[in-house]
Amino acid sequence: MAQRCYGARMLWVALVLGVAVLIALLRGGSLSRFAQIDLRLWWLLIVGAVVQGIANLLPADKEWSQEVAVTLILISFGFLMIVVLANHREVGMWIAGLGILMNFIVIGANAGMPVLPQAAVIAGADSTDLALDAKHVVLDSDSRLVFLADVIPVPFLRQVLSMGDVLLAVGLGLFLEDHLRRPLRLFRHAGSSKPGSAAPG
Image (cartoon, rainbow, N blue to C red):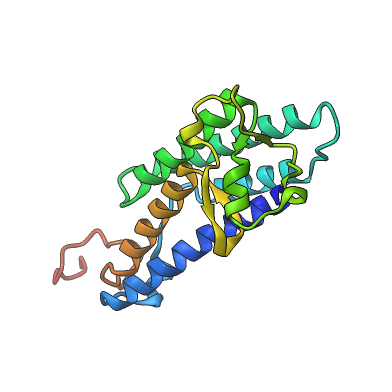
């Protein structure tokens, strides 16, 4: 099951963003406003995704892999937090940032994201699905901050999410919904002359 964690989390985020788009359209928004979304340092999202992708490719059966994978995940969260801070005035960004911070804290405290086996079973996994990848650990009596761990079963995705995953997706959804309902701008950058003024002769 954990081998599908990254893909399922992306599916969860995509699902929430899809709902956000639908809500925006029902509230008078337009898909044409996608082109006007201005996210500062957006390219760091790509860097963070690449770093997380590398972490997910690391083998789980090597002694060094968990430490490297967890380090890469924490670094990727750092990139995401920079984007959040650069866009902190945008709707939903502080919620997304809180979700990232919650995941960062619990992963750092446990040297991996703890996964609750009972929640995995409720989500539709069987015992053979619980072989964890390099950045996940089984939640047990030694786990810290368990309320931030992967303890929320989502059966229709066959996945267990953390509260941080939920807040991250909701924050991004609010950001997207807000931008799709903003008035269209005729120009990307406003001119320096006053409206109705004539060009200097």
